[in-house]
Image: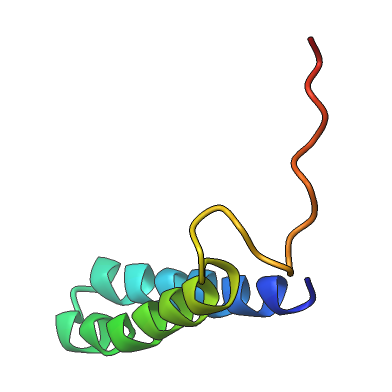
Length: 66
């Protein structure tokens, strides 16, 4: 599961950079981060969601508290 934090850092880090650029009004810079964000999303979904709901990289769901 070591890949998840790195992929999340790519997505979140670039999303923060995008937000900062947008707040400064630099839409060209902000738009430049979209590709990196989407690439991070796609890589993560490719690794963890090859078959919806199943992945050898994820543990079993938590036990029910019923």
